[in-house]
Picture (spheres, rainbow, N blue to C red):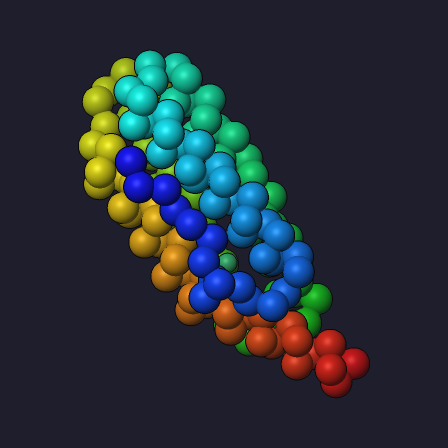
Length: 136
Ligand SMILES: [Fe+2]
């Protein structure tokens, strides 16, 4: 199973956000490993739960930063977070029901979502945070 690498293009330059993303990617890879090894649903459910807990914490930290600087694009950014959490919760519900999951579809969805989200909305947020720090 292809692992998701934290490549240089994903560095936003914001230490808080980048540190969180590194950990998030490690957790996404743990999920990919668990799926690739064909772990039982109860094990996958625990891995997914860890990922959900950490993702919520991370999104919370980004959202607190948005609020701190009165970020103009916070509504659309937050709605991306809300949608992703719902999708991962839906995935966990499927796993908890003991249903089979499509490993390839899920891993490519999660990798693509994270890459895209970091490269677009998180980059913009990091730029806004940097500008605010410079003018403060
Ligand atoms: Fe974000």
